[in-house]
Amino acid sequence: MTKQFSKLTDSQWDAISPFLNLKRKRKHDLRQIINVILWLLRTGGQWRNLPEEWPNWQAVYYYFDQWKQDGTFERINTALNQLDRQRVGKEAYPSVLCIDSQSVKLSPMICEYRGTDANKRVNGRKRQLVVDTQGRLWVANVHVANQADGPAAISLIGDILWRAGERLEKVYGDQSYNGVFANALSDWSIDFEKASRPESAQGFVPVAKRWVVERSIAWTNFFRRIVKDYEYTLLSSVSWLYLANIQLMLQRI
Image (cartoon, rainbow, N blue to C red; front, side, top):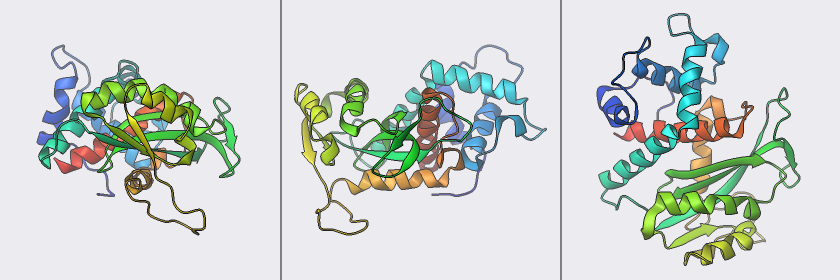
């Protein structure tokens, strides 16, 4: 895990450039646009305060908005996950996934999609992260913080089935998913296994098979743009999560 922003290397650019339209002539270099977006992700800078030597913030945001709308970030994320799994000798698609949620504060200037997680006393939004056994993010969702984990995760099942492929056999999660979400998975012949810490335990306790998703949540602290939610739209919030995982996968290439 590197803590400092660095521009894309040639090998990293080669891994993601096939997903971008490089055939038409453009005013701005797409490689530079990606570098600026990753700089924003790492440093938490504001769109309107981009350094003067870089393209105008409106031009950079135009591409960010286009790529989040057409699913480019999701496709890049899935492809890099597959490459990294194959790099360590695993099948391209996972057979086991882990799910958990993270409640984060929302910028005080934003009132859209805001709620309060009474359990964690967080006024903001809740992230649902689905990772494989080595912590790679495959599916993400963001919603108001006062929405329960299990019912909110049902909407992720379609994406889980689409991205994980036919190899998926089991999903691990805590007690909050052991209900409607587990029942919905069973309709697709996917097992759900509850993995929770003992009720008598105090503080953080690593739980077998599920601690990897906690580690993935901890990795978000290395990216200032997502330590707090600054986005007006939920789709933007989800896109930054995928970009964080993309950055992690690129560092391993």
